Image (cartoon, rainbow, N blue to C red; front, side, top):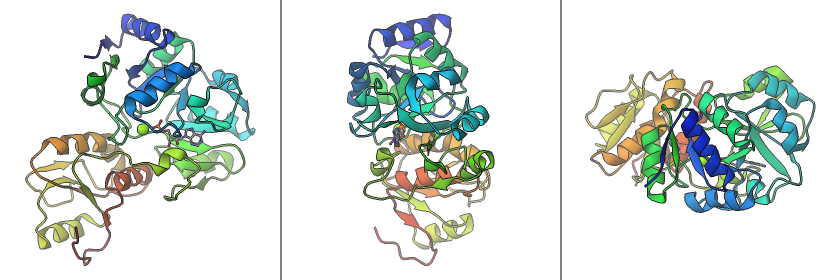
Length: 335
Ligand code: AMP
Ligand code: MG
């Protein structure tokens, strides 16, 4: 059973003691719940990998409480990085810079670079500040599962592992931070998130996107299975109207994760307006976990508008469906 820590002074003090003693603690952030350890302690960081079943070659993000702490972690970075952190920190942007040699290789997975983020979530920052060290943290799920966006979802994955958990509210954003490589110009987004390519280009002049699946991605984490419900999931990358027609034509029975514009169905979870990718992003991972508890063998998901955070949501949906995507209403149903 997990030790449950309230998000007050006493709970945060207890959490920081666990971290300083080399332990791990799950905590809320504005993106998803994280599973943290002292980012300067190799042995503590390895516990994160063991607990999650995370492949050792998938590096972690170091979370800091103050912008100036970046200089304790980064060996060097281009001048434009200052512009990015002035604009987007605290917030859902992880920047990859050259790492100082003292950063443990468990954090960087042996790379010369390290990802750093300053969260905007008050409890997360108080917790990091109380620890007095950078906190290495991936999402607080068992590897491959949807990231946890509320306390109950963290408990579901980590209670059996006896991991202490700081209890907070459901997260605001609901998908992980944008990860941007900042070792040369222009910066390159390796994982999309709430902060978009356009947002970054507006501040530094230009920004590239490198998120297409490939065998050896620049971001090691991009090659693994992610965000998957236990039930097989299929994504409909077409208008709600076409999705409805397809489901009816092929008599597809299961659990449906839909938008308000789709035809109402029994056994469905409705995330919101098709054009409101913010709301859908906030609720999608939890919906996958709920779908696993409902009657039905398969999950059918309506894709959303790809504007703004919508691109990141679409990337998460694609991975949750293991790239089983239907784009044309005239395609055959083959399973
Ligand atoms: P997670 O901790 O699950 O939110 O994932 C962190 C993401 O950042 C993964 O996709 C990692 O591969 C990526 N990442 C972290 N550090 C680096 C790095 N130094 N270079 C490239 N990608 C990184
Ligand atoms: Mg993760």
